[in-house]
Length: 447
Image (cartoon, rainbow, N blue to C red; front, side, top):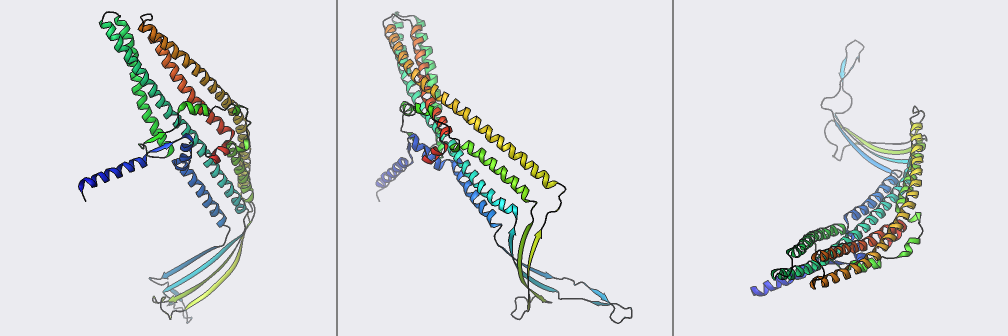
């Protein structure tokens, strides 16, 4: 093959692979991707799988259990027994049995009644619910983290774009003032004022670029992809902020049944109820049945694998009843302690309900304030841009001083950042409010 053709082909394949590695996301796509690939979400799924296994582990303890055991014994020196066979006072030495033996036994055991086992079955179901609720909680946290990371990347991109434009405008002002100063038509202070502003903007721009790189890496970690993977965010901050304005949310009622924090607190109460039942059940008797059968072989030499070796069988059936009688009030103390823990869990559930109601009021207030700040900062930005443009014209005509121009520019830069932050606040505060209102709905929809 022509070496040049091979080189071109390899380069073409490399380009294709590089394109395949590039990922692009809308916000909803990023959330969906993170729910499947975020490392915490993956481990939460594994916790559910582990809980299912533990549920079966508990169930299996009440099902038939079969065990087998093989014992091999070899007397290196057999025990000697003295016995007076003739009655003359002289003991003779005797050894009983063979030097070697094999005993093989199989046992079938069945639990007939155990109160703690019945409680354990109920507890296993609750534990599985706890794991599922923990998964929902994790998914909600991942969702909020993705929204925050996505918004921070957009904020950084917008900030870089704005600061780059501001730097270009300032550089133009500095260049023009430099020429005017060199011609003796401007004060040196005018030039210095503009140079100070340009230096500050340049420094902020360089820092924002570094922060943008950090924001992308944090976004990648949140989604569960490689730290340095190249990603593209397809939405714009302003469009996303407008999309997230929904004042109807401020009149939405709280549904405790769908709130994951309330579910977790309720799970805790149910767990404590079962622990109380468990302690009470320890005062009940337990009943087990068993059947075993086995074979024994004896020999002075190791002939147990020979076809002529004789084996003697035996079998046994039995029932075991264990009745707790007196524990020096230990069981009573454990039961009382379980009652106390249950009362604490009930109090925690009530506290969770009240805190959620307060969080809802606070979240609605923050969301409404974020919307108002967005609308206000948008108007302020328009005003600040007009003021800055007027001062640019006045300065170029010699009507305004460099100090007045710098003041207008500083006001514009502050307003720009306030506007960007206001858009991000709308997005994040809506996510917070949605989490309180519809925990289940958010996870099921993947949004």
